[in-house]
Length: 254
Image 1 (tube, one colour):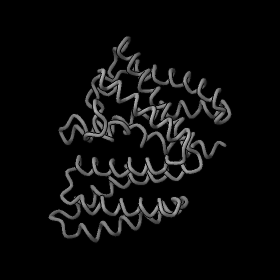
Image 2 (image 1 turned 90 degrees about the vertical axis):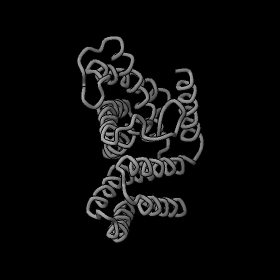
Image 3 (image 1 turned 60 degrees about the vertical axis):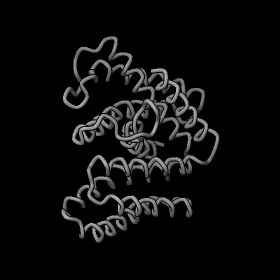
Image 4 (image 1 turned 180 degrees about the vertical axis):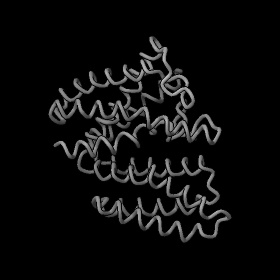
């Protein structure tokens, strides 16, 4: 538990430092995207994951060289990746199955992450705010669930999650969101609270999606990324689901 807390604190401090005080956030998210694609392809037991990884790396590298472009590049690069993967995976033993796995990786990881990366170029503190809301949701859900949880939330996928913890996560995130936005002045308070609720509602389901993938692959952790915390997907499962939806809502509200 001590090692988990230590590295969790270092991880949080690093993200706060990078997104709060530097312009390197997009590059860190690009590294996360590549690690996530690698772990997801391994969980899906892809026969040929190398094409997916090399094409993803090349697109992320191009994004870094050309300042990540705009939202049109999401469509363009996704179509390009899909076409290249189809042509490459036609030589697999089960091409249709491999293509479905690759497309899942693109939809589950690549598209959400490239959207978040593009947003982080102009709004790094928004990304940090979302991270903080996710941490708050996880923390309060754990504390309330451990102290008062009686009703399972999703017993087959995550037996320890409870409905009480889910509600506690929402309430706790609202409190932290209020305090954080008060001192930061990120946006108007109603929008900040709406973001906090959005994150706290969606984040647990992102965790459940990752749990389903790990259960199907019969593994406890998605990989080795942070000592005591498992793989990148174990740390970012809620983020890749909650962040893009929260950003989309935020951009329509401001």
